[in-house]
Amino acid sequence: MVIINAWAIHRDPQFWDEPSEFRPERFLNKDDDKRPSNFQFIPFGSGQRICAGANLAGKLLRYVLASLLHSFDWKQPDGAEKIEFSDYYKIFIKKKKPLMAVPTLRLSSQDLFA
Ligand code: HEM
Image (cartoon, rainbow, N blue to C red; front, side, top):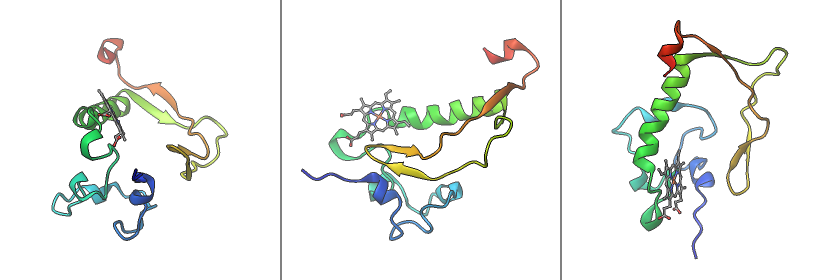
């Protein structure tokens, strides 16, 4: 059985410039082909057992993130340390230090949150 380690692939400098840097703009250029068919970017796995919800998740994630940013102002709790981005990998990736974020309602009416 071959086990593909997506964590290692997603951080391989052979495929990604400065792989540990948070640079979401690297996904903006559609001509720069980093799609799953090239097996450089496989958050949903690949092949026969590829995630059955990949398309739904791709659409939902944008909607969920946009809704959270639109509906709330976000800040760290008082006295919190600087946000720490490092992570570790076992079966899945976890942040080394949990991120605490405090939402505050930002829409003018409760009805707008429905
Ligand atoms: C960001 C969200 C998600 C991520 C990162 C994700 C990732 C994955 C991964 C890595 C696998 C294993 C693929 C493999 O074995 O090669 C998987 C399997 C699966 N996922 Fe997701 N998934 C997500 C959301 C969803 C959603 C929203 C659904 C359903 C509505 C879903 C349904 C499934 C199913 C049914 C499988 C098993 C497919 C099979 O074994 O044939 N996933 N997912």
